[in-house]
Image 1 (cartoon, rainbow, N blue to C red):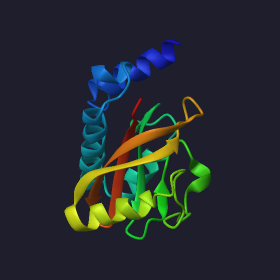
Image 2 (cartoon, rainbow, N blue to C red):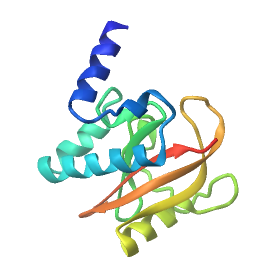
Image 3 (cartoon, rainbow, N blue to C red):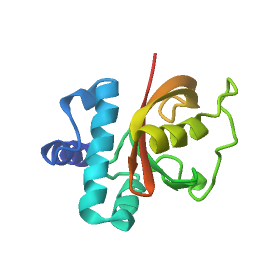
Image 4 (cartoon, rainbow, N blue to C red):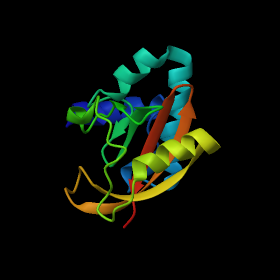
Length: 151
């Protein structure tokens, strides 16, 4: 428990965690963590960035709010909550409603640079299939994403 509190205080002091992270994350939180992730990638390079995102207890994983990263084709490069999916390209796999949301993520990144995508996804905290909205940002050859579950 003390280690968790210390880690949260450290993350807050470094700017990786906001006060709102203790409540249900918002779209503002998703956009903020993606922008911080993009800044980290720009400063430290893609390899170090991907390694940080893949850390289960790293600064880009805050429970319901976490960063994941695709390459320009939609192959998953980093995900702290679903490491078994790393290296897989699931662009042609729809969500529960048949939406090809990963394809839309790539389209938003490539045509707009940033934007929002709505879909349904299994919440790793609750285990339930829930509506989710994700903020997408293209950063060089990477697509950086974080989303929030909409209740």
